[in-house]
Image (cartoon, rainbow, N blue to C red; front, side, top):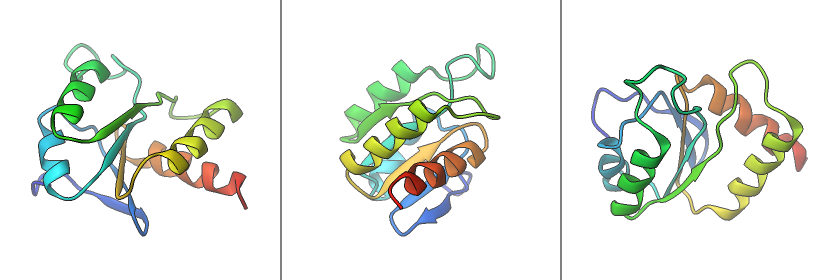
Amino acid sequence: MNQSVSLQPIAEDVYAAPQLSAEAMASAAEAGFKAVINNRPDMEGGPDQPTSEAIEAAAKAAGLQYAYLPVQGGYQSPEEIAKCAALLKELPRPLLMFCRSGARSTKLYHQAIALDE
């Protein structure tokens, strides 16, 4: 990934990042990632935020698997946490999760892992 994206390791093969652009998908693939989970709802940041549809197209073009699981910053429902747990089992690693800052994805990951403990 380019120097401007700060990746936070949240597990051995799972990383969180702030908002990624469609253009960042090729860099993610080059960095060795196999899949991406977008946790940021479309238009949360206004009309300048890239849409899930645009990011998904770029991810697939780069050879990445893509999942869209939009969640709110302050609260993730039991259903959203369960869906994340399922995605964590299905998607290949290394895996890159992102939202506005990376904090929401990190929290969601930890809640999903706790379901299996």
